[in-house]
Image (cartoon, rainbow, N blue to C red; front, side, top):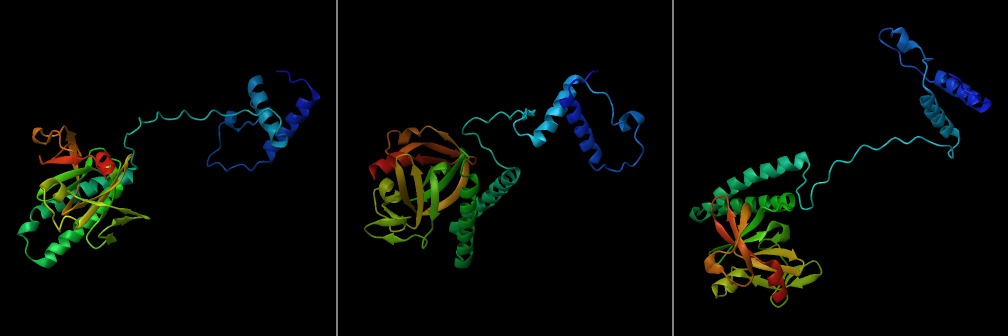
Length: 266
């Protein structure tokens, strides 16, 4: 194999000298003769690639071989849920914890011990805060509310935060403070039951849509549930501010609030 040109010979000698100067790792056992030889013949194209790499060390303008980047994995379609493994485990744990909480909440009316009721309420608050933070982007999750004896649902993707009694800064005329703004409170029991309830503003759910931000006053937040959204039940067809029915795993039907429509009417 011929390698013509004084420049190539000089670069080749420098390249060989560079290789010889590199520290070598000790081997546990003698390598086969073919593997020990540092003068194994190479093809012309391989030699040219090595020479280009060597030249590039001292001459940035020289041609450099560029390794191809590994092919990117296909992107998931927009809207698909992507969780780190740890977050998936946390979401599963919160699902299980939420079911236990739901069982406790279903017996709340039969518990007369005030300390026990406060403990369950505190547990509900903490679990709900965690569920909102971890499950916020999951399309099958809804925040279950209760007002005036009726259940309602908010798509979890639209929920900004929940303010329990005593956590919100309120003003009788302005409503509830959200950041630098004051939001009027829409009390669901007054809106849907035709009467004013002083307990309707005990808990505030703040939700956001493309049309604005809305503060909703309810009696109780029951937590985050998994549900399938279906069309409105026949009896509620035509009702303003509702956009469907959330059907939970236990068979509960809860009208889904249309945050955009309610915010426009605010």
